[in-house]
Image (cartoon, rainbow, N blue to C red; front, top):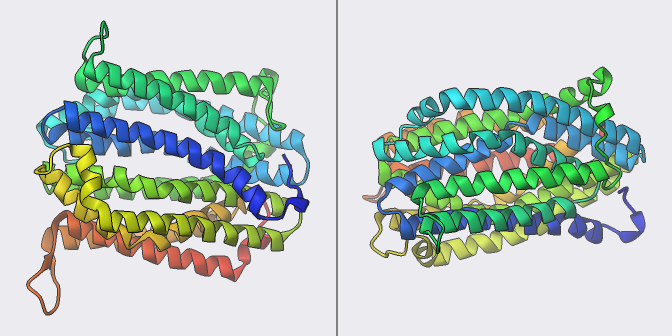
Length: 459
């Protein structure tokens, strides 16, 4: 769906961003429902700590295919902007082919090393057992996640974010209904407790992947899956990987550091781990506009550059950044002033130590919202332009040189605030290190964007 200049900037941006915002909101409802069920029907801090790790694990599975998603997004957007739909369609087939190979390997590895992964994250015994069970149940869903991730990315880059949103909405409905009914045990449905959560995820993801396959076979937005084209095309694959590999390393670096960050917090005990997991899940509300406008910025930037209009690409990226940043700042204000009420909804107990600690973490996160918006949305714009090397360097600098050493120092050793008796330590110190990392990366990406080198990158 090539761009129509007569519609200006706002309408194309909102047409792309709104479906993504809605679909991501629905996906977040699944996470919130799982946390609500965990807080109200599964006793103790162990399920909450396991839930926190499983949020990272599912993010890791979705990030596995980022090499192909990022490369496909940049190429499909460029080819769509240049009105070369046959070349965009070829990118879809190459991305799916490569993704299928990776998904097969990842499923095999997860089947054998899932328990080792959980132990590496420093969870205590009860929480570790629950997390290992979750990993074992959801491992078969990896190929389905691949189909959804790559299919949605290609459709979005072609200008169709609505289809992915509708499929996500159905997946959310299935996940919530199946998961809740199995955790609680409604009517004739057996009460499985903790196991109901991953079974709901498994059912929803597999159903959604089948619908995505059917949609692509029928064809949408100039993208159609043709089995006879599911064979390697070396020139397209090289272009896909040339763009995607730096972006994939960027995501892998971020994921690896995030898991290392989680492991640092895991050494602080079950309550700190549970509070961190709950805080991250609630904070995800602020990511909704950031992710939506990041997708819009990526698509619009890539398509305008493909059409030979770098000025329009710049204007659209800045408009997306301003719109997303405004929304995220408002959410941050809610976190700062209503943190106690928000965490109480999920725990159901005002005396829950994890909930009380998570409320303080939300107030810390609120400070980072303008920087987080800049980081998320400009990263999307630069990736859409094919400037994946710069985002990789920024991620590496912020996480490896700021967040991880800062979290180790503040979480384990602490820092006394000058002129007071207050010592910043524990999980609160780790979150302050996270805010510092986000601020540094946001400023670096802003500098790169205004430098303008991304406008001349060839894909």
